[in-house]
Length: 321
Image (tube, rainbow, N blue to C red; front, side, top):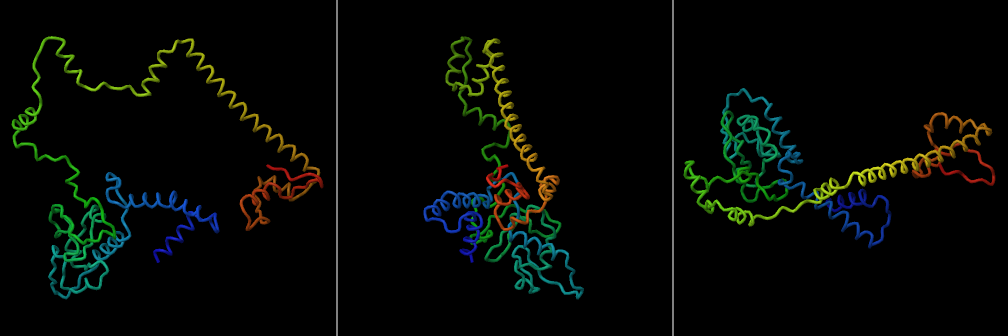
């Protein structure tokens, strides 16, 4: 099924204009079109892709969330029987977990309640007991626990990720800081070279000489060069730019006027023919249905739309509009 789906997507997305491509053409498409897109899509599926933005839930996570919401609203039986639920091991003796596709039951779900928004995107389904281990899986009313490293053999929607979800490693480590402010100041200043005070100007030059010289960017150089242009040359440059823009606009309007003039000549030549189909088609802004070109390409449909009801002489050719 996977191979059939791949070839179906491949034909639909990359070979929709080629019925029987040549072998070299097919190889080129696979190397330069298909492979980069698959690498980009694989990067988007990784959980370190755009850490600052929220990611959409996967197919498994959406189904898990729907099942959780449904069981959360379910009513408990009034038989008075008490079931033994263990959230840490994620077990319940009601016997409904073995029949649920996500190994959930209403007793466990209602014992936890609403786990929060961050839970749905980071929940992991393990293959061994406990099936679900997450800081938000605590009894209702208790605070969220510390981060739990997922066990080996966990199923993260079929993919292994580079980052397991521990947000503490994204923060600045503070282990090197001491408990008191004085100790921390001593530790930081001890690693720095002691500056010897000197009243001479040479010592200041020696200290700054070890710093890298800032290289000016290209934008700064351009800005400086423009600021140093004499006013007479600057006005000449601006005048030349304005003239170029005016010439470009004039050429564009001249070409448009020639096309309108050619179209008006065609319309004036067709009026004596008194063809009702063509005249109605032109008066409605060429919005009539072009049923003559059904099943044909866009070029043929456009040609029919432009020449519907057009009468020409026996030696003339169809105009190109």
